[in-house]
Amino acid sequence: MKILITNIKKLVQVEEIPQKWVAGSDMAKLNCIENAFLLINNGKIDNFGTMEDYLKPETWALSACKIDSLVGAEIKHINANGKMVFPSFADSHTHLVYAGSREIEYIDKIKGLSYEEIAKKGGGILNSAKKLQEATEEELYEQALVRINEIISQGTGAVEIKSGYGLTTESEIKMLRVIKKLKETTPLQIKATFLGAHAVPAEYKSNQSEYVDLIINEMIPLIASEELADFIDVFCDKGFFTIEDTERILNAGMKYGLRPKIHANELDFSGGVQVGVKYNALSVDHLEYVGNEEIEALKNSETMPTILPGAAFFLNMIYAPARKMIDAGLPVAIASDFNPGSSPSGNMKLMMSFGCVNHRLTTEEVINATTINSAYAMDLSEELGSIARGKRANVFITKEIPTIEFMPYAYGSHLIETVILNGKIIN
Image 1 (spheres, helix red, strand yellow):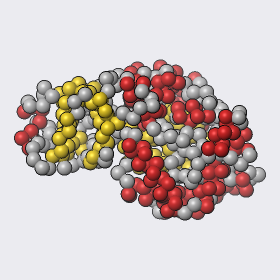
Image 2 (image 1 turned 45 degrees about the horizontal axis):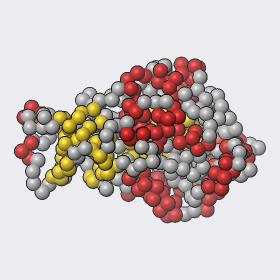
Image 3 (image 1 turned 30 degrees about the horizontal axis):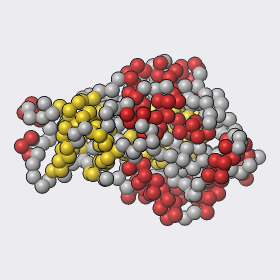
Image 4 (image 1 turned 90 degrees about the vertical axis):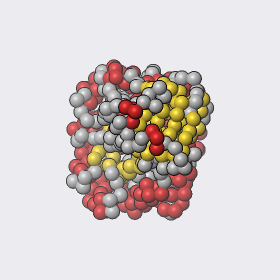
């Protein structure tokens, strides 16, 4: 089927020549077309331009379709008068497969307990691990499907989902099988990340290296044999996994073709950014503690700095210095960190608002950070993250809004009217 969207008030994030990411001062630039049209054909973006150019033959020279074919029962026409079209969000860091919720810990946070204090009393990741180990694959799938449908309605077209709430071989594989089923049964583009090194189980607290051995010698080979993961991740931070642990795990994963992603510098200056760059991690995420050394390490690397503003907001932590990183010439991505303990929301429009208010980023910067840059952080920027010919047709149409700035400004309003994934209208 073809979908023709006309009279678009503004077609956002347009690329004639696609790029892998946007960095530094270029993050404040956003290519848009006013009074535009967009043609989708066979699940791909086929053509776009101004309505003035719509009737010109030369506009269709590179198109798989011709203008005289845009009639009939096989084409869906949408008049987007007063509305805008954006590329779908790419959420490059989530933990949305989990069992139950952790709102009691939320009350502990309100009472003043820190993330580390809650973890020491059996809360945090270990709490989620206990619940997940008791849940069946079907229960996990059904709970995750609700969250998947929610983020689709909020404009997300691609999502990375991590394991890490299993912390045993059986339960980590169970999580990854659920993620695989979500890949197969939902319209979202999904990437799976193995995060067995999310926390140290209680029974290994006195011998952390033994748990690292379990990850390396048992978990990774089994996961690789079933092709359950695209990436491998480690929580390299204060009180979790050391640089030495991280290097051992990454080396083991890379032997099986799993590219690294790193949880880094959420709680302190951990060296996680530097080890991520050393091993060519696709992204280093969190980054509340980033100084000049970390910025220098990231320069001229292929590693995407990714901030998670929902987690910093929810935990009432310091905010990652995104402004400093961009001013230093780096790219920055934004992801939701959707999880039950520190960021129970996958709403990427809300993450844009946090990026503007708490990180002092401009509207153009947060749009780049939640689309093209976050698509790169999932190794998907060649097919997602912008409006470009030949890319996958994952877009959304807004309700009538006055400006692009209205998207992060109206942080509590649902502004998405139509979602199109893989060239099909979802809602």
